[in-house]
Structure formats: C-alpha cells, structure tokens
Length: 154
Image (cartoon, rainbow, N blue to C red; front, side, top):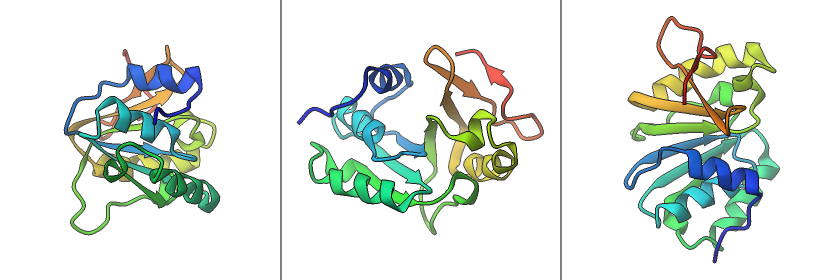
C-alpha cells in the first residue's frame, strides 16, 4: 500500500541521498510517515529508526508498521533528540534527517547543543545530517569543533 503523505514530505524524501542497504535515523519522526516513505522508495532494502520525544507519536508510528509494505525496515523509539544514544551493539547510521525539530533548526539552541554530540556519535564517519529549511533540505555540518548549524550547500 502506498504511503499517504503531504507533497512536502514527498519532496523531502525525493531529495534525500538514499541508497539501498543504508541505515537512516529520522529524528522527530512523528507518526512515521517519512520513515515509511523512505522504506517504500528503497523497496525495504534499508533500515529506518524513527525517534520522537512524544509517546503518542511513537504509538501512532508503531501502529502504522503493520500497514507498511516493508515492516521489517522500520523501527520506532521514544527519545528526545538531546537524549538519544545508540542501544548496546546497535550499528551506526549512514544518514540522519530531522524535519521541524527545534533542537536542530535553531529554535531551541540549548537542546541543540545537547543533541549534536549524540547524533554525531550515532553516524558512521562521513555520515550526513539533513534538516528542512532549504530547497527542500539543508545539510548541517557534523565536524567536531564546528558549529553544527553551519550550513553546507546541498
């Protein structure tokens, strides 16, 4: 069954540099629509972990897994961006994406300062972080010692 999504989320999914076999971390996943779009685009040859601070959002995302064409490509976990850490023995992620996440888009800078080290630690070397606010995305730097909100062209 095709994922029902807004044109904005479809445009964002289309803009992500996705490839088969990758691991994607979606920060602030809400009900999991973007995560399901990513799984659909890669025909399930991907693993997407969606995190959100809201228990209700995670419950909605988990409830939708059964309706996904690729349920084994998806997982959801309740966690705020600033408290996210990898589980024991959990593999690193190739890419992270966050849409309307105040800790990452500058609306909540204190939370952002706490979130970036955990996101950096969850990504493979050279892993990339994308947020909304570009055309339609912008990439944030994950270089240690550099302000993560320093944009890289994308």
